[in-house]
Image (cartoon, rainbow, N blue to C red; front, side, top):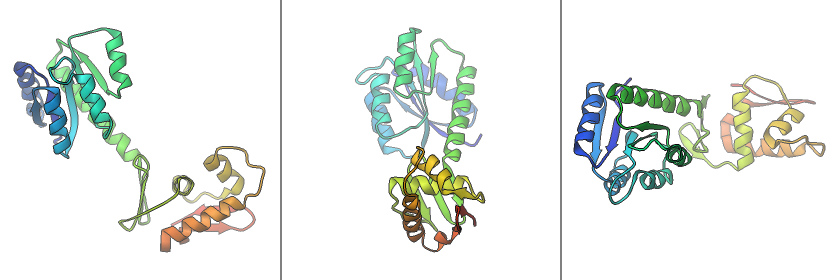
Length: 224
């Protein structure tokens, strides 16, 4: 796996050194923080951190407080280290969006393996949320759309409609099928609502709007 930058947060210098040494041997770049406040400051000022290894019991801000602050702005993978093995503590961590929970003492080799697994999962999740077709780039998780590198503003339903078209490239889609999947209910009224949204979507996509083909008497097909 290519080098990733990892923030290691623990108030015990010996523990930080142990974790850093094993991560460095496995070609990871490591930044250290000795308490919760320093960890938040470093994370806010460093843009390319890939993962955080976070101790629970620390001065100033504990691990749960740090995770809470970070989750307000980022879904970066977090592995928590704790001397506790109470199920309630683990559940609290997972409720805060922690990805893994490792109880001390632990094998450094196991920690490295967990780091690799979490990073692989994170990269896969990110890849799945990105769709690129014919100059249209959609980031589903960030709810962003770019056409030839320029961002465009879409309403919620326009975004959902475009996503449905991109996922179903080359498939003839009836108005009924589009309504059931994008509007999420069986629609018995006037299907012209789809035509209206398609018209607006085509306009916002500019030349790429031509990718949305009309199938007369049926519905639409997205085709590059």
